[in-house]
Length: 120
Figure 1 (spheres, rainbow, N blue to C red):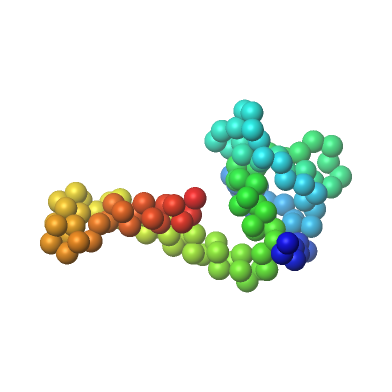
Figure 2: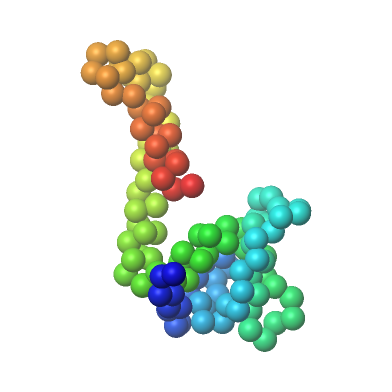
C-alpha cells in the first residue's frame, strides 16, 4: 500500500463554498442512500457529533487529502483547464465540427468527451 500522508493545515473544498482543514477530518463516508446533487459524502470532523455533507465524492476528497500540496494544486489547475476546454469545445458550432471531422479527421465531440472522462 502507498504511504499516505495527510497534509496538515491544508484547506480541503467540500463543495458549495464549504472548506475544512485537512487535519480536522477524521473519516469520509460515501452516501449510498439519498445521494444526489450536493449529497455525495459524509465528512466526519473531530469534535463534531454529526458529519458535514459534502457535494464532492469521497474519492475526490481522499485524493485532495493525501496528495502533497504541490500535486493537489497542480491537479486542481489541470481539472479547471480541462473543464474550460470541454465547455469551449461544446460551444463550437456544428457546421465547424462536421467540417473538421470530414476534412481533417478532428473529432471535437470525441475530444470533449475525453476531457470530461478525465475530470470525472
